[in-house]
Image 1: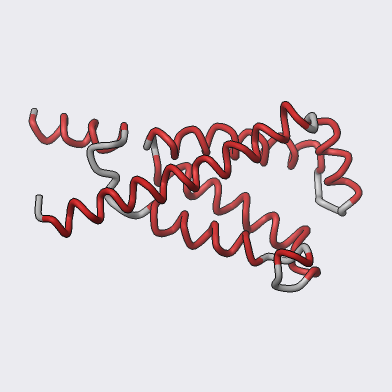
Image 2: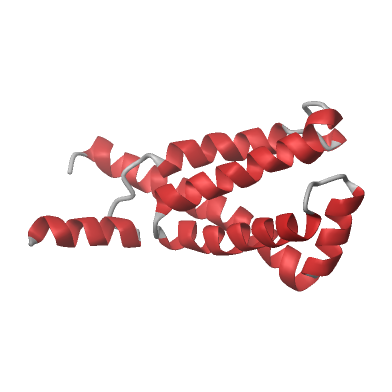
Length: 140
């Protein structure tokens, strides 16, 4: 592996773990801090369609998807699910608030989508479950 490839692998790992921590924390908050019923009530107040389903979907995808990103497991799949989660958040909640996150806008959602696209379609390297599975397959 060239120094450039090593740098790309380390950068991808760092980005993947940071994004995973962000989503894991938000999923944890939905289930264990706020409570999923309170999240559903909040979603209903914001006009989110199917608020109970949406709360469970967002909470599970963020919690499980965040953990999966941290360890590098099924990264393309969970990146896609988290992108869907963020698009849903933009369309149902943030779009009407404008761009700036400080005003409740979609700025942070777009940044997370960009990070998910970059990480989700990159080689995960040795510091991931996906990378180790791929390496094991190539050896056999």
